[in-house]
Image 1 (cartoon, helix red, strand yellow):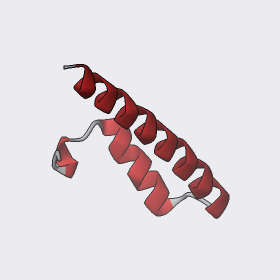
Image 2: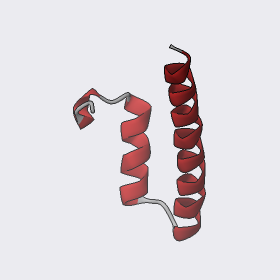
Image 3: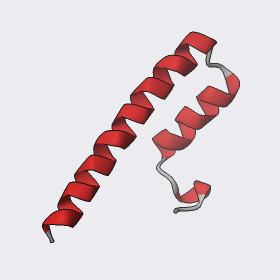
Image 4: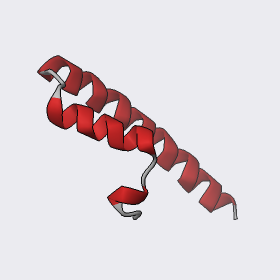
Length: 52
């Protein structure tokens, strides 16, 4: 896994926003969207791996 300092700027900004300003409702919304995006990426990754 990449070091935190090597992550894209928008990811670091999102994490900073979560740590500083996000309300509970915003946290739940972000969590939902991030989990969904990660799950979709994992499916794509594993589907491509199995085709090899």
